[in-house]
Length: 397
Image (cartoon, rainbow, N blue to C red; front, side, top):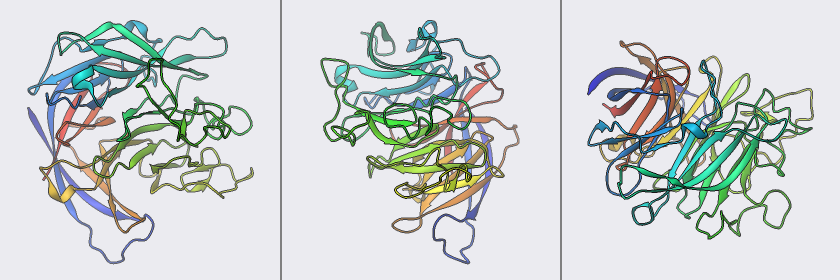
């Protein structure tokens, strides 16, 4: 494994109420190169089955396994033939999400989110959430076991979301983008604000059913109008979200439009503002900008800092006690890392990272978390679904 040393200076940024005259804290991290030649890696998750394997999602359609520190040559799952065509230079379609069932060790079930061709006129593609099971070989999925759980039609090629995760409640949470294009120009109010569409939302469903899924009875729009699957709304392109292992809080990075990137703590039934708001600001002041009832992000930053926020994880590993409870995330225009630390009961402080990388820069695609709670970053040195991807483990010095 190759070690890339990174020296980091955290510069205090204003988020909510910040203590004056606090001295910036200097940290340093090392990025431990785990593997190379990955094809657009956009996620790394564990199965939670005690195997300590790490499953890496390649956007081009495969899931790879890192076992005992080595990348296995054969994929765990290959759905490349099911995908809609990806653009060679840059694409937001593909295999976008993976979540293992909380009882994966005994039932072998896991779930993927991918972009399939559409048969509907006027749509660009279809987002598919599907269930699979593992085969008798624990390092290989049963490719014929696919069970379609949910399909969502996508009018544009971008803003597809794709993150999935199980909460402590045992339900599957799914992130969807606003349908793509710029400014959410889908109907008068946009998909993000339209509670009759599944786009621009985080969904919550119960996959423990004989049918495809059932709706949890406490979802906020059950018997109240709006789509029953919705857990929250007003999102542009949630990339990525994760649950804090200790508290159960759901942290979500929502990619902005022209000026602001944001991080939210997601709660039941709340409206996170898009396209009324971008971050804490009116998106289009010439229109009716009513902020009443909207939930503001716990952090935002403008495009002088970064262009596309990449959600990460609250650190809950054991190697670095000083990092406990800190939310580690970044920006695609990287390598550019940040963290949020609790400042008070309702405020967070962002410490911005200046990264010195002697081996050159790379684009941050996503973060990952292993079974022990240690953190990883997925990146690539060139655009597009090419074999320019790498996976690093983050060591905090």
